[in-house]
Image 1 (cartoon, protein in one colour):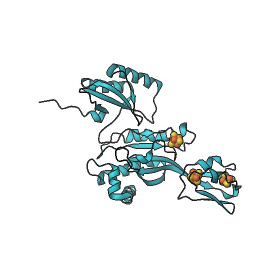
Image 2 (cartoon, protein in one colour):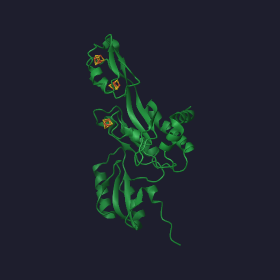
Image 3 (tube, rainbow, N blue to C red):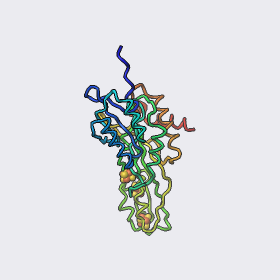
Image 4 (cartoon, rainbow, N blue to C red):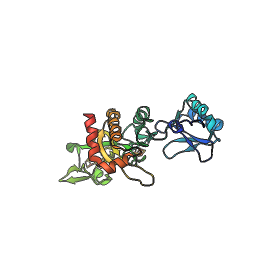
Amino acid sequence: MAATKPDYKRFGFIPQRQQGLLLMRLRNQAGDMTADGLRNLADLAEKYGNGQVHLTLRQGIEIPGVKEELFEQALQAVTDAGLSPAVCGLRVRPVVTCPGNATCPYGLINTKTLAKTLDEQFVGRDLPAKTKFAVSGCANSCTKPQSHDVGFRGALEPLVKQSSCISCGACVRRCPAKAMKLENKALVIDYEKCLSCGVCTRLCPKKALAAGKTGYHIFVGGKGGRYSNDGALLAKFIPEDKLATYLDAILQTYKELAAPGQRLSAVLAKEGIGLIKSKVEEKLN
Ligand code: SF4
Ligand code: SF4
Ligand code: SF4
């Protein structure tokens, strides 16, 4: 009887189209690697792969050409080098993250701390289908949070202090959502239209616009691929310290409502955002 093959995908290995060879996938936190990590990566590629490293669309790292018989040895070498194997198959996949306010001038929030939490607490969790997360530090949505199973987008609510406003109109002209206007010299914000991008709070010459609520907007049920769709907005301004609990409730709801193999996008199409939201809130209360 032929020996059963290991569950390669659980450890981030994928059989190549060339018989007997594997792609070895690694992951990083928030897209960051140290110079030492890169040197170790190069050594792994030369020792176990074909000397090449492929960078994937979702910040993943692939070393092609690993011989199947070297699977266990290569996996051990990854850990010994202080690197982390990726995860494939029907489970939470590695997280895509932009730099957020660590370096980006538009960043509203520290995306890296959320990426670390997601990586440590959720990546690898078994689910009905593959499940992808993305984190963006502002409404520019560079990592496409709306196109992921669960997406997190940094958000800031602008609050106006009318007594400081000189009605110069600078914020009205710059608001990308056309959510601001001056009425009898008073600034009015249409919060239905507001993208929570924070642009206006940075440009007011009189500091009349301050940050109100900050946190993450959460989108669920997006996906890319053959039949792509945007997800639906599930919650707004969720503070960072509540996100892990919130996400746990989303994933429990997904497990309850999904048939085997169904992604969250299919659940959204079948059940609608209303039911998903009420089930998530039930779990949080
Ligand atoms: S989403 Fe915003 S914070 Fe993140 S990289 Fe893009 S512009 Fe910067
Ligand atoms: S930029 Fe500041 S001062 Fe000018 S209209 Fe807006 S809130 Fe008022
Ligand atoms: S936060 Fe952005 S979208 Fe909202 S009012 Fe300010 S500039 Fe406009």
